[in-house]
Image 1 (cartoon, rainbow, N blue to C red):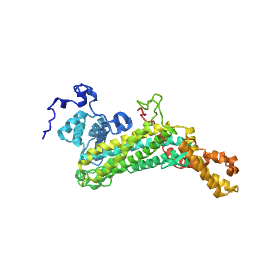
Image 2 (cartoon, one colour; image 1 turned 90 degrees about the horizontal axis):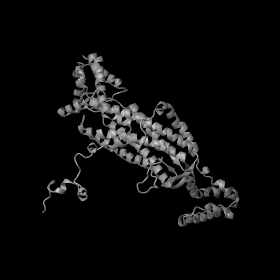
Image 3 (cartoon, one colour; image 1 turned 90 degrees about the vertical axis):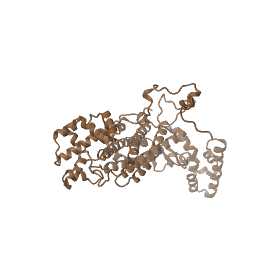
Image 4 (cartoon, one colour; image 1 turned 60 degrees about the vertical axis):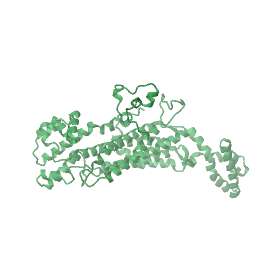
Length: 511
């Protein structure tokens, strides 16, 4: 048998086949030195400054220090020997973080929290002895995660409101523009462009309600100790249970939480992460549905997303006008929709009071989930604000199908005028089959109305046939439903959040 070659035994192993075939000698070590590391597209290409900051090292590790300050403040208030000088030193150096020193200490201790304890103690030496007093790593780790989740939800709430406000204007503007409804992606009874928009809005409104509930219900982990029993704090306060309870409440208050989770192991239950990721998945689902509809409407040339003057749709086909922003939404949404499964498995696999196999995956899915949904909502606002509607195309599609839909109304009108229902029904059936054949076999327009106009059996309604097939008569209560939905569901939410609506986002869509 031929023995497998070891890497490096032949010159070909030192370069890729393509390099060899192109006469190249491989990638030079010093070439493009600043670009030899993977850059996450969510951050580099898509993410907004606001959401990126929330999940940044600056935010994370300065929050650790704030939590240490809150803990020391509450411990002093409850009688522990901590001085004002120590608290001031901590307060003065919240943002004075030597990341290189923290990394050195982490390598030394193989522990990220202790690395930052020592980095904080380096700039606040008088407070070093009381930093992290009684706490475990999850005091800063888990509580910071919950703060980042809360701040991220508040940002998403603002962006959901802004998207709803934009879509509201669109829905009202086009509430009376009839268009084909589709079931099974086959032409169905008419609706209106504005009414269809309210379907997108309703999904996003349900998402907003869930975001609101999550913000209101989200607890802080609080002060729980290594396995959730608060034993270390009970020791610090000489067995005074009431002071331990007060410590927990006071730290929550200082970090602007209304409550702490009632009980925990070492960590807060990862069920919360699952709920949060499910919420993000819900927003992604709504966005995918909306942008999927827009992509199909773009193919029909009825509605199109914004298209910049110098934008190129295809490098090969210069005429192309692709719905690339909607496609990007669907692409990112597909990823977010997949994340709750990871959170579910993480929660299910936590043994007893805690296992560390939750750590690495949470470092990935929590920030990525929020970063992606933030991008999605920014794109939705951009798309909704520039949607271009082509009424003449829409009307042409309506009139290609409406004659078939109008036949029942025509039949009833003729019967009321004294006609024979069965004979008229047969005449309509024959005309409909012949008109359908013309459309499908010959590629010509639907001529059913012309056939009826030329049939004396329908003479009693010839004079009013045009008015009988006015599309607006076939949309039911669609315009009124738009008005009711906006008045009863959307306006109260927007009015209650005017302050958030008036905040401008820090970023726009650039790619």
